[in-house]
Length: 314
Image (cartoon, rainbow, N blue to C red; front, side, top):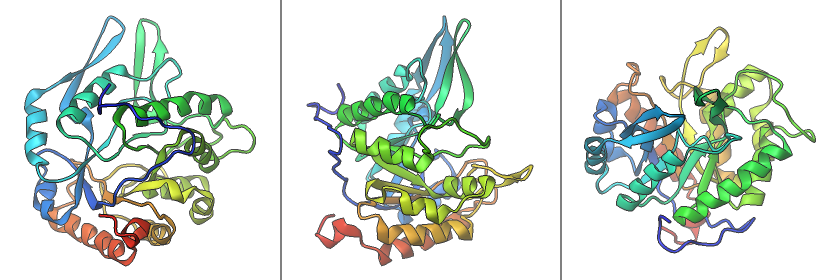
């Protein structure tokens, strides 16, 4: 088991990590990331980029690429790294992706992280001849059955590495997700963190997209969310396609998302990091543009020292 002695994680047993500050997506060789290295307190690494996927005989394997891993270790030397997974598929009914956990074990052994996260969704489904990867995370039904699947998996991930595991709210594009008992995504996430002892990665751009696309009040939703479990916040910007706001990290953060961040920060006592997400294939996000986004996030960070800082935490 990675991370040394396994720690007990009971429902409600949540220990927030130390505060880091303002971070950025790690993209190997990206000019904006390299130019802004001195302006960030941490980098967010997706282990999936360090390998390629092989599917054969109905099984999926993530094959590590040693050169990519070595470059990532060099590029992030001296900078805290948090992990944001893409390929675990935590919500797949037939089981999550064990190959991703093997990859995460390897990363953790070389570069321990203060927390790690995954999307509230699933990537793989059972299909004739093996698994089918649908290519993008799909949303979970907001039901008791889905919670009973996710809660023990989240708790196991926290125990496995001895640091908080965070679940990230997802963007979805089809209305009418299956639900029970009047649950929406906020109520579902609240139930998850209460039962699992895990935390939240609050993606404010995802929330903004859903609010616009599905016509609800983002501030009202935030007012019901367990903000005491928010460890990390994502901000980003994207594009509109066929009338839908899309979860692509190709632009500056829109003003409504900055407004959501300003509202959240004084109300999230254990917030440990804000990270700006970007894609490598985003020509609008030149180094000077990214730097201005980071500076704006930094100004907000300084305004709200958080509960940990008030008590002398690092």
